[in-house]
Length: 420
View 1 (cartoon, one colour):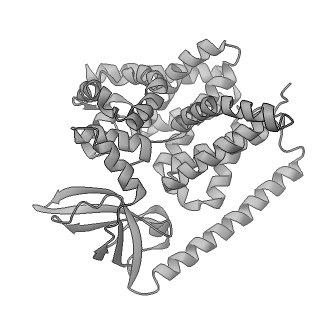
View 2 (cartoon, one colour):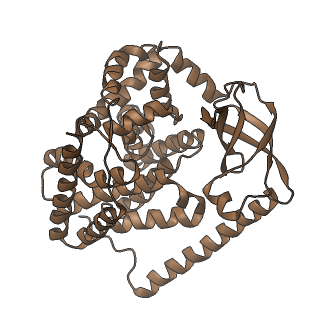
View 3 (tube, helix red, strand yellow):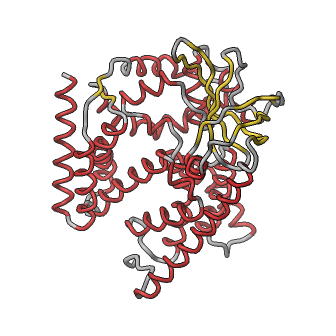
């Protein structure tokens, strides 16, 4: 029987853990600062970086290209190029950036730098080949863009982003723990039978659960590295590893302590992740899932499956309104779409492998069209602060959880009323 999670048996152990984390954090920041000094040693620096997003922007009657790039050293930055600059998504650029105005904070959080692009690597990367293979199955570029985002963490264009925000399904398109969980279950399903055959014949003494986890975790690690470790995916993968280690040793994994340790370890080893909005939204999603499971663990698995989607939707809504504001009458449809995505995601992978990736394009186009009509619902930061305060209270008291759900339901009614 699982024991209550208790990683620290005394205040001394708790203090030593945080002290060790403090030393690691200082060391990580010193490494980042050294990299920053190397970058800004002169007024300009030569950088190799991959284009992760590219779009056209018009400002003061001037049209130009905006490039978002990730350098080989891990920092992210923006630069601009002439409006005739060729399409370079996922290509590696060698460019000279001007660094005289970049601060250390900018270096960690992401910055803009003027640049000169002396060359574009025209070699087609594996990621480009897969993106092209996906695009070849779709006549509509938006449809191809959706699947490229789902499978390869490619950035979706601004129009799609706006529609997904109105429909409340941005979390489905951005690869995160939700996708990792589905992939883990899919891999477990595919590998269990072959492993069982080999185990019965060659190594009956092995622990199948541990071996399968190691195999699946290794495959997911290569996948995450191939995608350049998006912040939300890094969070979920780290939590997967920590969760299994705790579970394997008899601890409960549905715990705020598990989430807190994951966040702390990621921040001390990767301080730049602190500035990632995707990371914090991913953390918030897990926080509210855990909050529901902690207070309603007495419910059957079936009831939990259905109610957890309603609960998470309501509890994440104030964050979505405060950060993005976009809302529409079809926004609550995201509850059903999230449930259906559990089947749609692995099915769409197999369809693309077989060359029938366009099967759901008509349905997706009709769905996206529902998000074309949007309303910006005003939601002040004071109301968000109250929501966050209630969320922390709900960790300790079930009454707080009920009040938090009531408060979030009131926000939902307010948003629907504002749209009507």
